[in-house]
Length: 383
Ligand code: P1T
Image (cartoon, rainbow, N blue to C red; front, side, top):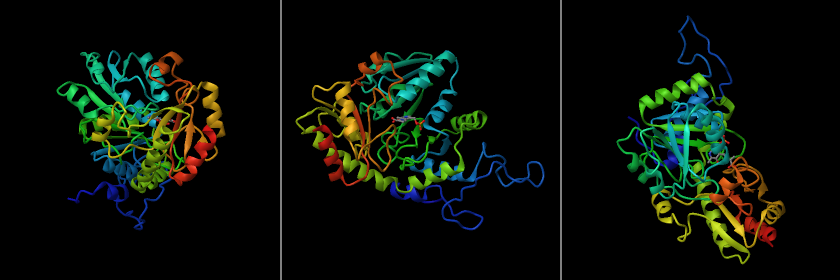
């Protein structure tokens, strides 16, 4: 048996072996749809690339390794990975999720799966007591996103796992904002970890890809079946890029966290700032949970300037030069977003405002540039 690797080695070596054909250290990009057979069924473990592809398999093994799970599955996007989890369910089943989550996840729940007979409850999940009141015999899945996008609420994974212990309810955690470097939900008892690997795992804003990691063999069989039967897989090139990104995850995340902490404190002491949402502050309502379940506080924060409205927020994001105004997050370069009109526009205004996603809110994905340049950019834009 291979020795268990520490995280900073698992990112580079986890599940990886030199390629069998020529010893290539990086897995080749097996850009093929199919594989030669000597006789029907006489193949070398690969038949058709929707089912298996060596480059995707190398990535899936790496994903499993960095989350300390037994099985990894890679998909064409984060939402495709979520879609596969929801296909485990049947009409009439109920799902509890947080009232503050990525707009596209909310849209997938409400606009696609509600029409197939699934029922969703959205509660402020950082307060575990709200979850208990929604659990009944039909509850089959608790969908956690922590930290939440974009309000940076922290949800207590362990306490949710304890809440459903002994019940036939899966706990799935969207680990996109934290990344596996900061938080490993399977170790905390979750059943499924999901990533938009588009973000920190790939890390260079050049790929759209999703991932699921889990431990239970019968659940793995079902997800593997859905992955092949529905076919929302990622291609070999994107698998390669994500695998390459994962190799530097731990180094990038350290700088993301350092820069974000510096910027959070800078904004918090700026006279024109009303509020900064960042779980590293002791005053953050879920700081204790964050400290317990996360290794660091991540590369994301949101803020509001004093007296700001829609126009004021837009004019700040337009004035930023080094922070690029764009959707997405988790790349080496800093990005700024206006959730109300961008990432969370698919959530009705009333619903999003209830969870704090107001027109004045600005979200930052802090990159790994020199933090002095990032602060200078923010100083000029805020004025
Ligand atoms: O974009 P895709 O790879 O399909 O992942 C969707 C997704 C799922 N979960 C979370 C927490 C996410 O943040 C996302 C994608 N989010 C953005 C594009 C964004 O800018 O917030």
